Length: 169
Ligand SMILES: [Zn+2]
Image (cartoon, rainbow, N blue to C red; front, side, top):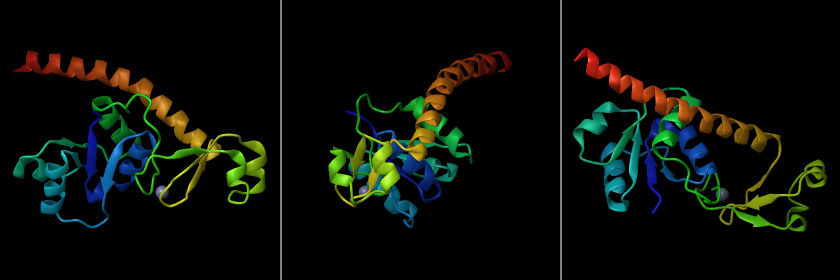
């Protein structure tokens, strides 16, 4: 079964992007640490946090995110947890899997130039938000492809770090 996640309040943007690549990520703008940990445990979710204290104080499966930069954060998480094979993208707002819809269905819901120039549309069954392979999505997809490539590099780098540690200790 694919891992599911819950992100701490500092990781809202990371949560959205992870949803977009198909991960199940809960995120609340305001939630206290105990509640965060309680939900992670109750639902078997990996807690994503930037707070080292949280990872030390509570016994919960978590991943400490080191970087402040979104692209590096994505690298950190996706190198550990690659997007599930064949998973649908999820609504960045609602965390609900998107449905592919017929082009005619969205005719009145998207700008005319978008309707004319695009053929693949997906819709969130919860909020009705419509996603298409437009420039916004294309940028994201290119960035994710870039991240996929750098994950391979990152893994190699991590290996050499570990080897380096052994030498110095
Ligand atoms: Zn939605």
